[in-house]
Amino acid sequence: MDLANGSAADTLKVMLILASASPRRYELLTQTGLKFKIIAANLNEDLLENETAAAYVQRLAEEKAQAVWNDQKSLDTPEDPLVVLGADTCVVVDGHILGKPIDTADARRMLMLLSGRTHVVLTGIAAVTGKKVVRDLDITQVTFNCITDSEIAQYIVSGEPLDKAGAYAIQGYAARWIPRIEGCYFNVVGLPISRTIALLAEAESTAAPNPN
Image (tube, rainbow, N blue to C red; front, side):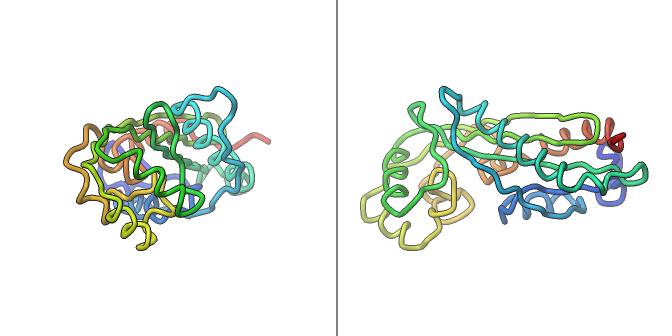
């Protein structure tokens, strides 16, 4: 996977696995031209005591990637070194981390918090190989217009907010409420593409089979 030269798909020299079941991350990574498999990690995603948002998403990204690498390490060979990519995204407003809403009432609470405000979206990414773990973090500021109660109710009925961090999808209906962002758009969707490509290039440079 010589990502610095030529087509990423044409120069893929590692076996790449995306440790995520997110359809948004699948679509974004597909957009890069890379060939990869999907194996989702099933982990406890609870926030640790006194854990910051940045530490939280970076920890989960690494734990997801490491769990899948450990399960699939038999695939790691000199000819096809195994690289597993993990990612995790959260929304932060007033210092509070907003993950995926647990129900419609929670989605309403989150959207009311975001209404008429600027918040931060953080995505941690990590790539695990047989020799090294490489990590990165991307941060984007997102500004919302004020949203009425009826607009929030209509949005929740659509179902779109219920499986999204912060209870909204910038690439969906919620785009109408977002006049500006500062930073990477793709980060808000769930995977900062440019940083991910750079991370994978670094991981590839050190990828090697596990001696065990």
